[in-house]
Amino acid sequence: MIRTILGIFVLGLPLAAQITIGEPAYGRVELKEAGKAALVYNYDSQLKEGAPEDRRSCCYVFPVYTPAGVSMLDDFPKDHYHHHGVFWAWPVVETPTGKYDLWMYKGVQHKFEKWISKRVEKKTAALAVANGWYAGEKKLMSEEVRLRLFPAEGKSRRFEVTVKLEAESEPVTIRGSQEKGKSYGGFSARFAPREGTALNSAEGPVAKDEDLVNHRWAELTAAYGGKRATLRITPSEKNQGVPYQWCLRNYGFVGASFPGRTETVQGFTLEKGKPLVLSFVVTVTDLD
Image 1: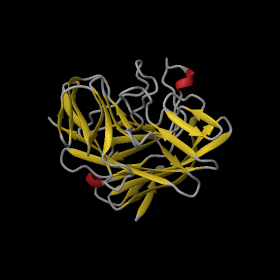
Image 2 (image 1 turned 90 degrees about the horizontal axis):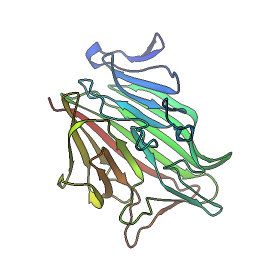
Image 3 (image 1 turned 120 degrees about the vertical axis):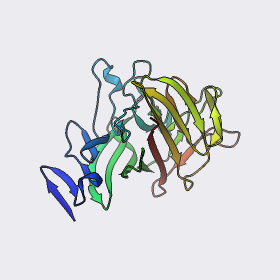
């Protein structure tokens, strides 16, 4: 049975197993396990002090904590102000009447519309929210985000993000980077300053920066304040186009590129009434 205590949704379980959903504040909702922060979903507009106004963003996950409390991600880093924790965006968004860039926020922005639900079920916490992609006042895309946090299992904890996209009226084509040899654009994570960075994938270690190579999953391992931890992104096998190409960077970036870039695939077109559903599992693990 779900109870509301002091504005927090709590499942009637022993403290060690409790997952809670905080009340919305400052455009954020915090999820906790056993009273300790697990992650924050930024549902409304955010801007870090010192960042340019045109980098203002919403609709992403930051911060994310391991069971031991290690925070591995960055938000509004000075070298890439448009990177935000765990986020999803595309550098090319095309319609029959316009071309936009959701990666750098040129002509189009994510916008929060409404909460669908916030609830605790069994041992998990679940959020569902309706967003939109807007070019000024014109809505190009409907976006439904569903986020589910699972309880820690030993030194690991995971959460699932499912993004449902549907063109609002006219068709919308999304593409990755059009730079030669690159395809970034899709579901990504930006990492905080750290030491001892190592990139790894389902197919083995990744020794140097990489693009356009397919993997079933990818992860970054490093030490944060002397504490080693890993964050892995695993796309669902049911997703369109898996296995994905990846953008992997030793400066601290791991991104699953959809739709990728090959001789036969240069973009993906969405139409009204034909939604695209993409689901990913993010797993964080303490190594010390």
